[in-house]
Image 1 (cartoon, one colour):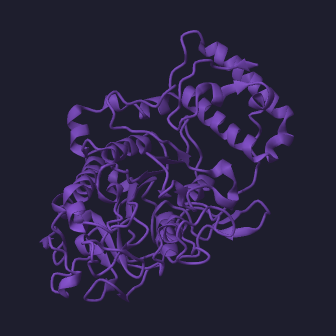
Image 2 (image 1 turned 135 degrees about the vertical axis):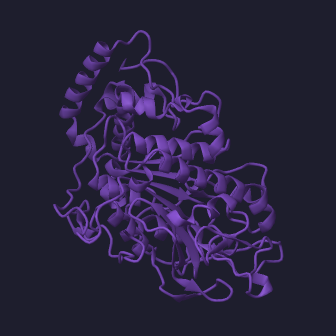
Length: 465
């Protein structure tokens, strides 16, 4: 057996160099990726709304952000629904937010708040599927739902990969620093290419950018492998792949080839290697975002969109030793968790990103989305926590293509039910696509050549430039 590279060092997702780039038997097959989709020619945005965003950074806050303590506080509401932290004024006249958001409060003139999100689903994985794809899960409120038909609509990142080319060794969509899963590491549906096939999966990089001297492993060649030697081996790999196209139907082999291509892209792309090099950031800048795994992942996301990645989804970290595994799923000690780590990390990293992009002249071309799978119940439970709530919750959009200082929709006195301008996940997805200059009605094709629109949602015209 002949290996392209022969040092047993793991890539960020745990795939070793030998596993990723081995040539021989099935390994050499690498296997050509199937062509399963062609995007329609219809692209661009309506003349009334010029394209602004070139990229998206998506904050995915696993467990759902409580609307009462953030974007939709009800200081005059019934006592069970009020946050114990109170509210603070923002830069936007008449808009108050939770008191644990002091940095974000000074930036609301760049932010559009949507207070009327609704999934009608109180389960993590099925409500999450809606927010990740814009498509309702079948059935609703199914906890521990797994990927697979009929719930195999592509994620927003996968949809963007059908419309945006990979560049200089970097894919159009990347997810980090980990996947989204329920207890037991049961993966949620809606995180991959779904019916489009693995070719359109966002790259998942499981890593910890907060570690000292962080780097994505294997972004340089071993000393005994010159660039010429690598080029010759890649040529050989290409020839063998051409002879083994018939194996592309084998799912495991197809996945193997996907990892191979990712490893090759990282090895051969100078822009990719530079993007992952956080040592190029000053200590002051790294401190500005915060030292947590999530915060440093946000900083890495900024570097990746600068390098040309169209969408980077930053999933919330798990924090071992904390209540609720450190997530936003605050069934226990809700207020203690918010004050202790959730809001300090979020307020700091979110505001740092907005300010950093603005200082670099990139905010107008970078859309920032603050999203989770649902909100939280109006009442505090017997364990001093709040439970799942998909009837009404808040998200926020900022930057490219978005008007700042806007509040869309309203809820009742307990922030428990939408009373005006209800927004469905499909509307949020359609708005993101529109801000990227992509018509939501653009047709894509599944593996059976059936034509489907990217989104059937309505663009939230009041929010877009």
